[in-house]
Length: 236
Ligand SMILES: O=C(O)c1cc(=O)[nH]c(=O)n1[C@@H]1O[C@H](COP(=O)(O)O)[C@@H](O)[C@H]1O
Image (tube, rainbow, N blue to C red):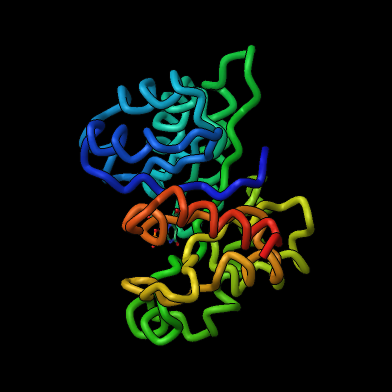
């Protein structure tokens, strides 16, 4: 898996997505999330796969084990790189997700990597404690979910860059730490709570970064992507 940033294509339509992607002349990694997938259906994946993008399908599945098994088995038909579930769905659900993904992957391809979302990067410690009634620190909760995800056999987690190093200590180098919550120094936080710049994320142990609005809402998205890439690759 290459380590280029995943650009979060949080757009409602194929037309807007296509218009955004047109000026990029180099191969890029993209993330398809709920907004794009749920309004356009699986054909959006076919349209993007045709153009050879490396895809992270971010649907954050969270349901009973049998339902997640079936959904993953179906989604495995698409040539995607990475897919996720909510770790809060539990160990059995994650095991079934992995089983479904393996069962549905055509023999000609490698199984997509499966990662578990720990605590969303839009969640603060205070919010987690009062709304989820978790009395531990946010770091402890994230590490607990990372361990559970690893025990279920998954390939890694989605977390904030701020937790990546602690997860590496418990789950190892190979375990993926895919981190949204990325902002350039001049950007607003918006709804994100646990953030870092691309350079900081690299320094503190993210294996992959996911970047949305810092690129998609920039005046010049190609230029913003280059800035993110240079920072991430340590060129600046
Ligand atoms: O699984 C994800 O991708 C995800 C998990 C998480 O904890 N936080 C998070 O922001 N994301 C996604 O990452 C992207 C971040 O977008 P921006 O905040 O615009 O950079 C969005 O598409 C979110 O859905």
